[in-house]
Image (cartoon, rainbow, N blue to C red; front, side, top):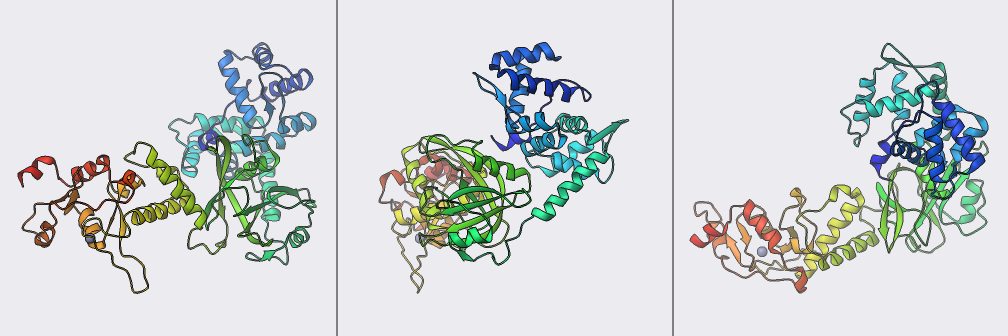
Length: 494
Ligand SMILES: [Zn+2]
């Protein structure tokens, strides 16, 4: 599910007064009959004011995404929340389902504490709180408000929405849980401590009964959920664990990973609730885990990896801890290097969709690009051939993007060229360009200081990288020339 999906909410049949009754009847029917998908759709059309089966499907899919029901073409049944709600008729359960599956419910309740709001104001609130909320009409806000009315957490009068005492109570309980579960490290354990499995079991008063690894949902004495997440560099997971934000692959070692497995579903719940997630990291197989404190699960998405779908969670450290990673983990850079090398087998694209990458992945990719380009040119300026080092042995040469990074120019080796600082500057600022035949072009600006120096380079051949496939491509070279006014005409006229 994408983030957009989690902004999306839907109704169910019936108005504020009879929606719960309709929902409960349907769940009871599903519980008793385990209908096929078709039978279920027919039941809804027959027993509610439902019109088209398209709309029914949309509503059912929504309930399925909340774990209230479980759809299947064969036999449909109840999801965890649906079963609980059918058993106990507790509004809290439905609220839990809605607020953990859809963003914004908590936000609305909290805001209503400060006084009644119109639907329009709720819409504006959601738009300001969630980057991904693209709303120009209050529809999505109204759908949330209606559910809150259905649950009797909100009352509506004369176009104003007001928190009820039940809503107020719900908020207080929620705050209470937050205070008690906001979870700090257990006593005697600090962020940065290295612990053995036995020490972890003792600190968290939990047994594992097996070699700990992966995602471990637990409950404390008060039945509050928390999670212990373990990541190691040698493990089967391709995790990129660095400071700040990082990615974590869900559980499930073969086949497609599932949103409903115990560990994955708990991490998904943690996105929109306050389940404390404690993070442990093991750099190499010395058996000790570094406790890195609490992390926030920000989001997740499915990604194709090695021929199967895996869940990629984006997480963020609450504390500046982590493996001493001012340097990025070597492993994450290697991963990006492999991706960039692979990309040489495909047609180049002018730009990268780097917006979609996490910050840590972007940094790893930057480093990988820079390393690959500099190495392909043997740390030598492709224009002047200079190969300088600092006294401590760091090369001066830089990996320049031909079509620039600020335009989202691709981190593609074919959009790169190794240049010394001077020629990097001259290239980026339009003194120099490169023809499709890899000949150095010089801007005809004889009145500018520097011209006499640069014009000596005119017509020189670029030193090409040792990998043919990585040669600068016309796609990028042409864009660079265009943006600095090196069209072919003026070049010929020189
Ligand atoms: Zn140079």
